[in-house]
Amino acid sequence: MINIKDRIKSIFKTKEIRNKIIFSLLILLIYRILSAVPISGIPADALVELFKGTQFGDILSTVSGGVLESATIVAIGLTPYINASIIFQLLGTVIPKLKELRKEGQDGRRKISMYTRLATVPLAILQSFVIYSTLRGFGLVGTLSPMELAVMAATLTAGAVIMMWMGELISEDGIGGGTSYLIMLGILAGIPGTIRTNFLTMDPLQKTFFIGISVLLIVATIVITQTERRIPIQYSRRVRAGGSMESYIPIKLTQSGVMPVIFAMSLFSFPQLIGKFLVSKDYSENITMWGNKILEMMNNQYIYNISVFVLIIAFSFFYLTVVFNTDELAENLQKQGAFIQGIRPGNETSEYLRKVSFRLAAVGSLFLALVSILPNIFINTGFITATVISGTGLLIVVGVVLDMKRQIESMMIVRSYDKYL
Image 1: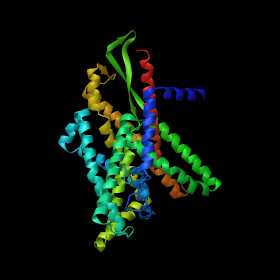
Image 2: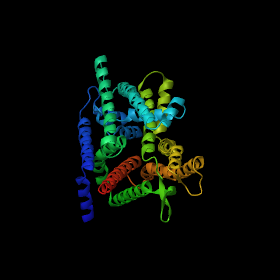
Image 3: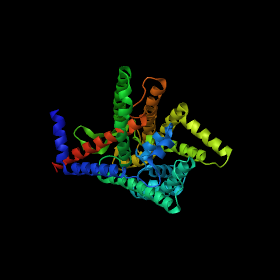
Image 4: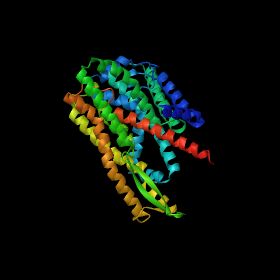
């Protein structure tokens, strides 16, 4: 206990870490204030009624930052920004110009980030109009005048841009990944209400299952996300008494972190939004029928679980190719005079690292996908009646907390080295 207290004291004694923590808490305060400011034209009970009895509300609320059903100025939250990120990362594999930008390093990534931010605005406007049109089609809101509609769309769009901006500020000056951090805050904000409505109504046996499964999932998530394979490397130019200097390349089982989970949830919410929109419109009997079929499929637990499982695995491999550039890593190792024993520098090193990372990703992605759907399976089979947090929410929260822990530890290590410089 003393060591933990000393560690906390040392963290807050470090000015850089203390400022980052204070800044992150300030963003939290601003976020909660904004999530309490209602928007004109859309009552909160209308959104609650729209999402009642479907998976759609939980999914869209998760990726938006947990504030969608409150009908506030940040209601659509991070959804447009996440969708824009998915679009440009997918386009980056087929459009030559975007491929070249990805290869340009930091400058190229900065340009792609700028395009992503610009694309967020029209996507936010579109989502605002779709939500309003769907609500009006179901008779949950009245008809707004053109000026009222423009104000409503502009307010929601501004809220989405503010959320995107706060996420980038967190990435630069705070602790944790910006987008993931804000989503985590939204998930945590809903936990007390879930405990109040579900946990207190359980019988002792259900509570035992509930606590046991929750602890098991949390421990397993921490262990798997922290697991890594260390590939030894040697530096032929850095010689010490016992021979060439050795180091290693750490490759995690979940190299992509929680982004595949977030991307899968965001993509899965799209057909459900389209289905709701089609059902709300009285265009024709065929269109309404197709809308109902889409919603029926998306609300089917078997289809939901299988779809989420497959999407998380697919995005894990896809995102790995984005965040782990083996060609660039192999080139940097060769420039530094480093090599993997038994592997030739250059293309062979790149190919070896790619194979290792993909094999690890196969195991890591299966775990992420399984944890995401496991609570739903337990509920459907009757082992438990409810969970405090969904599988995807658990992965996001644990992933963000561990990422924040790693950042703080890295800054502490740098600080300890600085004392001797």
